[in-house]
Image (tube, rainbow, N blue to C red):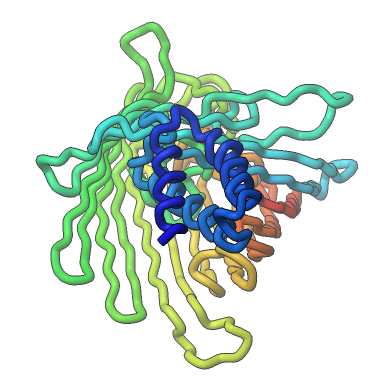
Length: 417
């Protein structure tokens, strides 16, 4: 009973405190004084300290603590640090290139109201939207930090399953793609998007993504931008899961323009684009949980097959290489999270010269070019909680110059927090 009343007293002190410093300092002092006076035993003091700490943590998690200002409790932070060794060599080049690189990202997401949130993220890198890496070089030079995203998101309460987002935002929730054939994983689009999800039947969901993304500002009526609509189905029956999507891309004002950060591999892209790149894309993934059952060494957790296809629909393109595709598989654990989890993935990719806009594909596949073919193998291993090892190998070549093959190897250690 004595422990109970002392715990209530300390808990009340924490709730009435203006800052969380009470727990870090004054509570410890108070408990030590009570032990010295014989009011509490060391074991009782340790019990109170543990229980009070857990209570405060629970209150902070639910946003109900009086020890910390309400606006602080409504903000969640996330981030990661990646260290990388990278080797790259093109067969017709004189020498290979070795690079040590780092990536740092930090984001804050604030709950403004029950249905509105805002997010701000910073990342290393440069203005290149397809890379957040910084190469270690230039005699210990300082490295750049840029605005990676800044958005608001509205969960429309009057329409269940409807979400609106605007600003510069992370793409994955508003455009699903099974591979990085068309979209580099670092690209965060700018503009506005809508996501709508509805359950059609048990285990089957229909979802719709659409939006308008700003590509450039030209101080004229011919500002290039991208409209898109994606309709998808996802389902799960027992140990089998499926996902399928059809996406229509409708860029505007690309013909006659030049896009920043392009690879220069589309037709006449160094002068002006000759196509508007209206395109249709199909994507699918089918996964199997424990498909073989009972194999040793925990290797049969998850297996998936996936593929993607794109077709440039414009009839004003002189070139005939207007299609692209990728396919592959992955096996191991469905998600690499913690020790003893791992996943291997293989991707075969082929992208025609004018199949898609050359400012967007994976930058590690021949510099983000079109007119390429590529093999990629990825092994990801969980070392400890929130620490992963990644090994990634590409063998790529231009279809117009197949003898000049590029080999690229990356070894990453990622620390998440």
